[in-house]
Image (cartoon, rainbow, N blue to C red; front, side, top):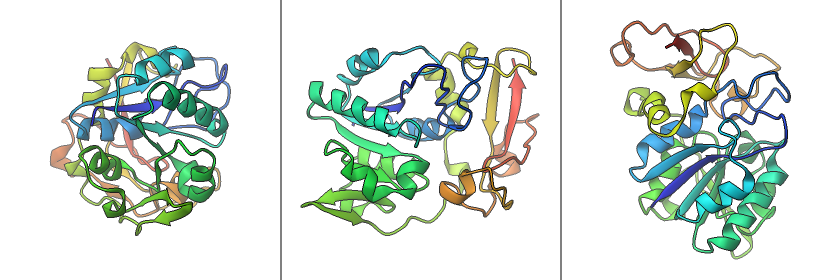
Length: 250
């Protein structure tokens, strides 16, 4: 299926980056790459990753872009959920055949409420969504995909939970999708030389920080890493929250 993976446009001065979703206002256009979506984009042959906030893509432009796709994967947040629902309803109105999935911490924690928010949402993915959305894009029926929730005859159906991904080496590198679909000059960390790229090499976090939602929602606490041989030479992995990463200034 021709798939659009979307970090949706958001309200003014809110950086809705799909790998952060926590700082509401900041002095730079965008801090984070939409890393979660990039893995799925790399797994789906016919796909595009659209990071609307950092690339100044309006809701109207997003609806126009979505006309050309068969499947939409939208990373939503609690702060932007109502706005995201309005957006997918507009997309469905102009592209009635498109299938719509929502992913992210919000729908992980509240799958029932999320599905009932709008009839245009075909399913939501609980926790890590890399394989569930790629399986759907390849034609696998909903009832055979682990880790998702969907409505059937007015009832919410939950397929069995999917185990956390252990073999991170099997995942594509997010940076390949960055190069294909994103303008890296749109991302800025003030204490690094601009532009920069973030390499992500692990998931999970054993810490119990009360301010961090990722281990409690998406990635879990067990720490999983790519193998040393799989990580590009010269990249240093720094454990932080749910994802280890390294910044590379270009």
